[in-house]
Structures are given as C-alpha cells and as structure tokens.
Length: 236
Image (tube, rainbow, N blue to C red; front, side):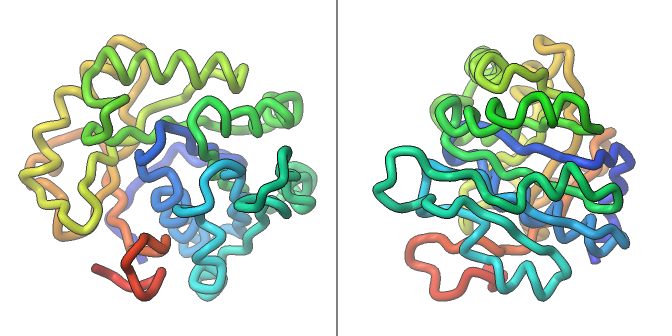
C-alpha cells in the first residue's frame, strides 16, 4: 500500500487531464489503486478516446486484482469516427458510495469527453487535476503549461483544481532528471493561482528534495503497457 501518500483532498470524482505524454493514465491507475487500498470502492473510467497506445484499459486485469473496477469506451482504438463513452460511466454519478477516477486522453480533443458529461460533473463533488511532464515539448516551460491549462479549461468548461508534478523519462527516470523541473511547475502554479496538488514518480526516481516540499508524493507502480515492454504490470 502507498502508505506514504498522505493526500487528504479526496473527492467523489477525480479527473486527470493533461498534454500528450504527461503520464495521465499511469497517475490515474495508481491514484485509483491508492483509493481502493484506502478502503473506497473505486471505478476507473478510461475516457481516452484518442490514443490506443497508452491506455488504462490495457491494465484492466492487474487493476482488478488491486480492487479497482474499470469502464472504457466501446470503440476506442478502432476506426470509429465518434467512440462511444462507456455505458457504466453514469453509475459513478448515481451510486453514492462509489468513487470515480476519470482518465482523459488526447489533450483538448480528448477533453471533449468531459464536456459531454459537464452538467453531471459540475453538480458532483469533483476535482480536475492537470498532470504535467516538463520533459514534454508542449509543457516544458511555465508559459506553455499555463497555455495548455487554459486550452483544457476552455474545452472542458470546468476549472482545473490543481497541478500534478509528474515529470519523467519513463524507465530512464532518475531523481536528477526530475527535481530540476520543480521550479517550472511551481512557477506555472503561481501564474495559474493553483496548488501543486501532489507529485508522482517511480520510487527510485523520487528526488530527495521532495521531502521538503508541501506536496504529497504518489510512488508509482507500472501498470500501463508501453511499446517494447512484455508485461503491463511489472515494475521496471
């Protein structure tokens, strides 16, 4: 269990958005497992209707073993023009004891999936977190992070609640390849008047400097299938 993750800002629905390559799916999967291990009934909604390569649905069996149920679009990853939203999505809103985690993919295009359920989401206890990886070109500076945040807010029609520091280089991540990005993330957060809600990293890549930060750290387990990896649930 991720016992060191002392995150107290729990909401009935947690939505993860961000630029392509930010690591939304991995963060969503691990956040869902943390909720389940904390005693909550959790459904992870894979709303990545754009990208068929890095999706939480690929780890459905491993997540189920951790106590997380999943719903996903019926036609995602196919050649259908308009992938259908998962039929079980509304149960997250309707069942009072069920917590939902929404994994939104495809940047502004994928964020349109949120717009389709905006009235239900706006009326529910929810938070929208923007996952940021400073090693991606569209979020490598504070100005670009701010610009991306505005685009995503405009598309979803809902305000972002906080940023998630998830700078990484996949399996090549080391603490020294992450901690340099803290100032960029914090500068963007100040410009957006948002908190850095939490940080996420593989255990071996957590920078020592993060122990002095106010943000909690979600130590990630690999769930999502990446090209060239034989198994979707193995630690690197």
